[in-house]
Length: 259
Ligand code: NAD
Image (cartoon, rainbow, N blue to C red; front, side):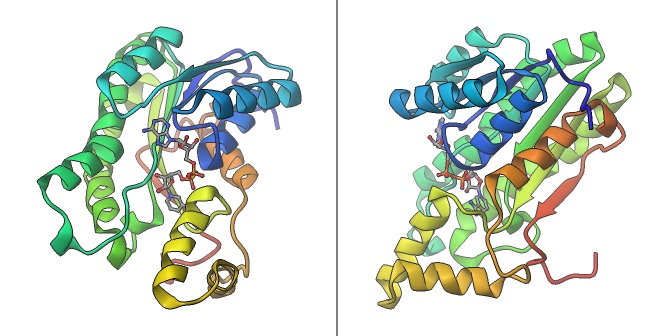
């Protein structure tokens, strides 16, 4: 399927690895001029080069922390008027809410709620003027079914979800859509990092923890970043202009509800 977005400018945050990288790859394969952002220059440059080689499209990269004002300024300086924005950042650490002070909450809110809101604010009006815009926020299945040890994520991402629900309806008549993608378990570094924490606490090996997680999913496996990227690219396509303010789960069926 031709996604109709060849030549569109796409800014993809937190994209040297994992889900963000999957989105950047899929958008570049659809012909977009992609700018990828992540903190570590070496990894990011290698990712940009790999995507460029695979897609034949130019890929710009900006090494910065997207959760800071300076980082966002650097990303927007490199890609000032994106047609497509994919909001993403590392997830907050797990823990017990009794141990989280105000600073821990502010860090989570900055990364997973206020950073995407700032980037939407900086890019949405030019999208409205051009009568084309696609914004996808990578949130989490935890927004729909909270995960007890990820209270910082449950809370911060729910704040973003509430904001997006309102603003998506405000901009939709200008052919600007804002939607959220909610990952369940995907095969990424983040998955392995949280498995390591569980392994240490439970005395199991990381492989045992990962195998149990795969087994617990109705699909019997983790999702792949290519599958995630394909859904993101479709949401950014010309075909998805009527998909507005949705929270789309990609979780292999983990969420147990009928709807
Ligand atoms: P990952 O660790 O594999 O990759 C994260 C990417 O973000 C890396 O490229 C890293 O360099 C970059 N990054 C992190 N913090 C950044 C920052 N402040 N500024 C710029 N770049 C930054 O993680 P992932 O699994 O791809 O997860 C992406 C998001 O999705 C996270 O918020 C995570 O909590 C969430 N999520 C992931 C899963 C999963 O199963 N993988 C499930 C639910 C939610």
